[in-house]
Image (cartoon, rainbow, N blue to C red; front, side, top):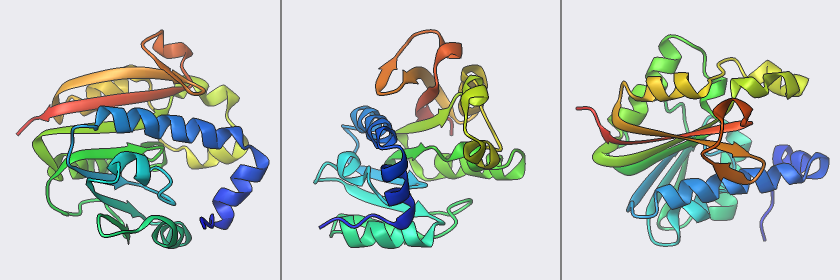
Length: 203
């Protein structure tokens, strides 16, 4: 039995299609990291993407500051290969992972020192040939965001800023657009959501 936390249960009742969008984002991240043997997820929330990311065979570590969310993740998805930590991951050192995934997180992290620490943490915890997947709402979607989202989204990116930021840490960065469940390479400014995939980190 899977028991959701009150937050996710509320979202599921209020706007169930949002869960489909979230799972589609994880599906893309899982495809991009399919050949990676170990996964670090920064901002894993309740761990609903963990099963797709680790695929039953990989080592997975999910980290989040949300205590009820991590408790739900542990109750629902923890195993000998899947671990969740309730910690602030900025500037932490958990070793080297073949992939780092972070979806719907960077927009909640303040510009300046915290943003720098976020990207440095990704860089410091990934192998030289590892794959990084960052997902975030597009700044061009802001006029259509709910008041709740607006309050929490303190650091919005457009495609070029996301790409140029990640290029400080990875030699190769690829940008993808997403609308609802569809990932594509269309016009970035008309995308609701953005992915940046980085590989071959700068040492």
